Amino acid sequence: MRSFRIGSLFGIPIKLDLTFLLVLPLFAYLIGAEIGEVSEILNDVLDAGIEVAAVTGGSTPWLLGLAAAVGLFVGVVLHELGHSLTARRYGFPIDSITLWLFGGIAAFTEMPEDWRQELNIAIAGPIVSVLVGIGSYALFSVTPVSLDGVRFVLGYLAILNVALAVFNMLPAFPMDGGRVLRALLARSKPYAKATQQAASVGKLFAVFMGLMGLFSGNIILIGVAFFVFIAASSEAQQVTMKAAFQDVTVGDIMTPADELHTVEPETSVAELIRRMFSERHTGYPVVDGGAFEGERLVGLVTLSDAREVQPVERDAYTVADVMTSDLQTITSDSDAMTAIERMQEHGIGRLLVVDQGDRFAGRSGDDEQPTRDEDGDLVGLISRSDVMTALDIVQQSGSVTPSSRPKTAN
Image 1 (cartoon, rainbow, N blue to C red):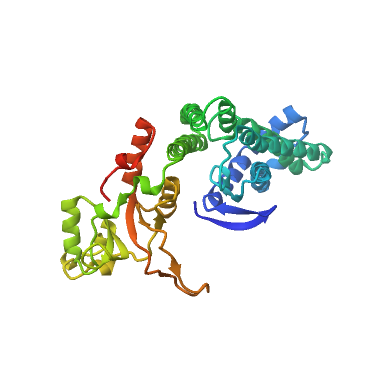
Image 2: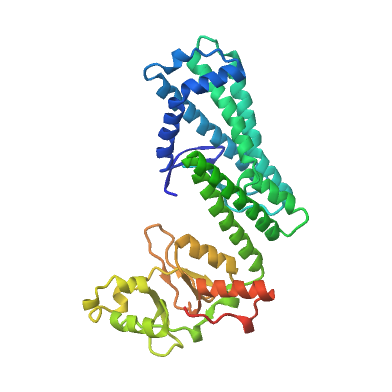
């Protein structure tokens, strides 16, 4: 999500995603368009005494719709603060709270695996929403009957915040109710198994919500269903991989240096593409030297780099012209999950593995560019195909050993 910071609460950055700038006017319009019907509901349910004609004339519906929409998203921020402050009490840092298309997201640096902690964190948000609803109703009850617009907004927020809490408690993982379900399942099951089961329930609810949205023509509900389904699948896969790679290091699953195919900086792009075709690799470490021993790692070149050169010019360009010298590296003793997360963070398909001697030397000033220490050596490469092969081995055999290490292409 592309977002920008608008402030902070309790030291937690509050951000707005660009999609929020689209959904806020939409919510304001939807509320304003139905203000007459909603006012009658508030009169029936809360005995609001709102004069419908007073809130439906001129530009009043749209102003009240905007006020209610802003109030709704303030409630969403408070909801996420409930999660965030509870998580921080357990020692989990919070990166930010972001308002986006489907509400709010609190970005946790790490998710708790203790079921009691997750249970308390999950229910904190809905509890805050209920309290916001109660607070809105308290203000509504003391607002003079003559202030029809104010009573409409407060009454609307009172009902909607409680409804938000109820909706979030549906066991549709990764919504709050789904996380409560996982916490309860994790009381007697391994965390990864509990996540898989909660995610399965969540995906069933997502399908149900999607069908409801489809038959009712509710685009927002369809969008929420899609988000829940994708998010449940993604988090279940992430937790499964973390459990599978708990005791696995990069060195266990990487392709070692003596099995790597490398290229030299002076190799032409045309020759590089011929090698990619014949060897069926899409990425090569670039080393400076003839024999592998003692070679110096200078870059990484991929198929996407080579494609940037027009076919008629590929004989004139060399690997040095197109390679990436800003390398993403990792050490062989790092956790396998660290490598996976780094590849996901940078949107790349492979990481160069270097030994402990690899350091970046240079002055600490922000304007100084780091340089690679001469003692740093390339010891291997880990790619997504290495990771997926290793995951299959772990799930089928229960471990990864050097003898079972995948030797997939880089």
